[in-house]
Amino acid sequence: MKILGIETSCDETAAAIVEDGSRIISNIVASQIDIHARYGGIVPEVASRQHVLTIIPVISQAMAEVSWQDISGIAVTFGPGLAGSLLVGVNVAKAIALAKKLPLIGVNHLEAHIYANWLAPSPESSPLKGEGTMMMNFGVKFPCLCLVVSGGHSDLVLMRGHGQFEKLGRTRDDAAGEAFDKAARILGLGYPGGPAIEQAGNSGTPCLPLPRAWLKESHDFSFSGLKTALWHLVNKGGVSVADAAASFQLAVVDVLVVKTIEAARQLKVEQILLSGGVAANKMLTQHFLASSPVSVLIPPPRLCTDNAAMVAACGYYHLQAGKISGYDLDVVPSLSLG
Ligand code: KG4
Ligand code: ZN
Figure (cartoon, rainbow, N blue to C red):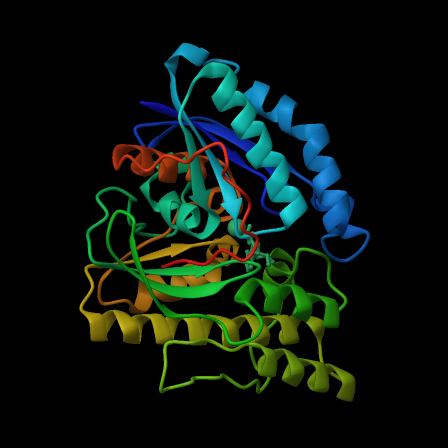
């Protein structure tokens, strides 16, 4: 069963065809990074206009080798995200569903990030290619603990089965990706901040004293104090950008890894599933693989950042469960999980 996935929640215009919730047939992502980089962050109005220009060519490219007769449903992200951006994808999905008489499947973007773990990666795309063992992303076992770390969210979610999500923790202020983006701005590095900090940190050592908000009494996260501490450190002067980037990265990684593994132990889960743009971070994946008592599934980097293959995979499981949306499906910019 082939599903067309459509993703326009933020600054990536994406369409993909996925078979049986796992096999990627096509996965097209048109990134707007270059357009927004000159402003140092995403400009919502520019993003939605760019989606309007790009969405049809992106879908046509995703459909290049596939016949419409072979498509069983149209899955689309309806939240969370930027309202104007979400509207473009949702309306295009509705139009296609109506014209082709196909089921319309509204998908939560955060749920979709988690479903990137069901996509079968090609061995070459492993994030730790050539660096020892990598858990192959087949056979997710329930219950599992999902860490969704993106530009807007740092959620710790218990998943007991398909479509069964219980949110255990969230960020109390900045999301992990947002913290990377703001730290990069403090350090005068580019946008998006995650890859920029990772690259700068590669030539530094994590030697600077930065705080970790453990919030021991809960599964919540907090990264704004860390960002402020970095700002003070940099303002005092005499700090190398590479060392600051390495130290900041380690502080974020430490908190995410220790708190997630602690929760996994408490809840006796079978597996940990990483997802979201920050899961593309090599240090994060290495620390998880080195210290987790249970297996850790990590999508390859291009499936951690926004894409439509994860939307199609998620849509497949919705369709299997009979969860179909009406044509009155609306965007929900503040949609959450669980
Ligand atoms: O999931 P995503 O592509 O979009 C959202 O749903 O937000 O995540 C984007 C976020 C950005 O904040 C970006 O800086 C961060 O993921 N990110 C990374 C890396 N690649 C992307 N953070 C740390 N290390 C990376 N390699
Ligand atoms: Zn995302």
